[in-house]
Length: 158
Length: 96
Image (cartoon, rainbow over all chains, first blue to last red; front, side, top):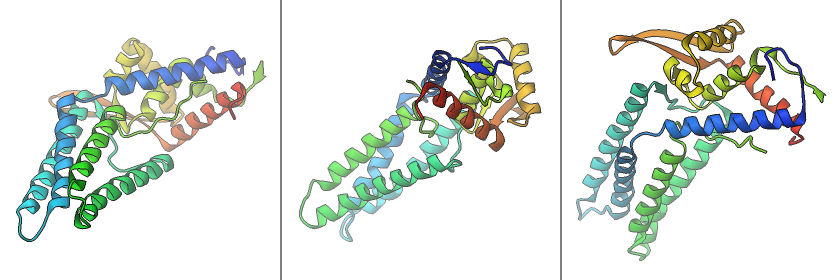
């Protein structure tokens, strides 16, 4: 394939798509921030979910929620700063239709986990906040590891 | 062989790879793209100039942390062109 070529075979097109796919995946891999930062961010989010599930008038778990929210904010800021030092600027707000859709789905998923953790405990399932925190933290870590820049790449490979 | 509705600006392998890299994030620094593509400064600059002239990418030079950094991003026109190029490639392969 040269710069001005306008005729392309099926094989060439497939090879180009495959190479683009590989480029993106290699780039995404190299864009990953340190694992420790991913773990700390996920743990602070887990703390928010767990504390929200356990909060009552009679206990101090609301404090856990505030600590979790503050540390989550700090770790996210650190996450973005690390990217900037590496030479990558990540968009915090979604810019494309695909990203708006996927962010909305994630918002619903994390919202359901957060609410379910508390509601199930209130109806008598005591371990619900533990499970909700585990799922939310685990899922958060998975997303940060797999999609560090927040872009959900569609596969071009044939 | 298929005659494709290709945009010759974006069709060159290196320029296609640059667009693919820029699609993964909001902005990337010149150095990162250079490392990912494994090309020299001059080769990359030449390709970037072509893309910039076509208004497919935006180049912003800033002094950060006491050194000059060049940030690159896809414009909405560039994003559209890259997507339609991908669509065309998929059409040739028979995926669409």
